[in-house]
Length: 243
Image 1 (cartoon, rainbow, N blue to C red):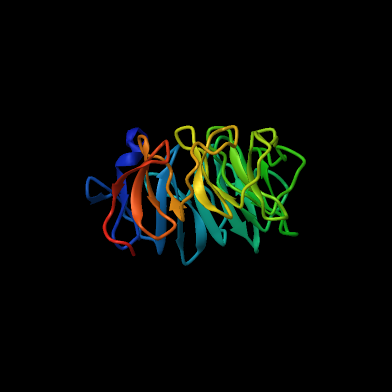
Image 2: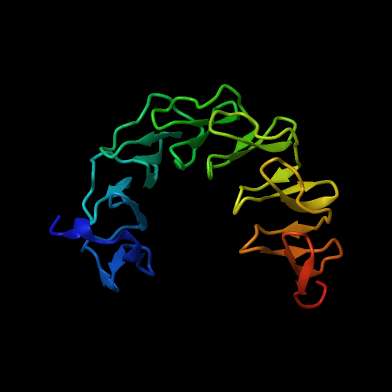
C-alpha cells in the first residue's frame, strides 16, 4: 500500500464536505464519495456512493465487491451492515461473520455486541454470532470494563457481567455505564451515583447528574440549579442562576 499501512489512523480527518479523508490537510486519495466515516483498525473505512455502501482501504480502494444498504466501522474485525432490510456483521473480507440476521446490530466493544431480534428483544453476541447468555431484555447497551446496562421487560435497569449475571440485587429506572468506578442511576426521587455493589455513594438526589470527571460531576439540583458536586454528593460550586 505504498507505505500507507504505517499511517497513524488518529491523524486522519474527514473532509468538511464529507466526501473523502484528509492527511495533514491534504486528500488521502483521489476518489470522492457521497459520504465517508472514520477509519478503524486495520485501516478500513465505511463509505457510500451511487453504487451503495461498502468499505475502502487507505488508498480509497474497495476492500470487497459487494454493496450493502448501510455499512459502519470495523471493531474487533467485525463491521455492522444492513442488507435487504436485515442487519448482521461482516468480516474483513466483506463476508457475513455468521448466519443469523437481526432487526438491528450495534458495534463490537470488548468482543461483545448488542443485537435486536425481529421480535424486539435484545441480548449480546460474541464475534461468531453466538449468544453470550440465555436471557433477553427490552434493551441492552455496550459492554464497558466487562459490564453492560440492561433493561428488563418491566423497564427496570441494572448491570450485568460478560456471563449475563447481575452484579448486584438492586434495580433502577435508568442507569449509565460505569466510569471511574461509579455509574449514574435514577429512581423516583432523582439521579445519583452508585458503586459496583449497586449502592448509592451519597444520600442526595438530583434532577440530573453526569459521570464523575476526576472526582467532580456537573449536576442539577431538584430546583433546577446547576452545580458541581464531589463524590460525597456535596455541592462544591454553583454554575450561574437558576434556569
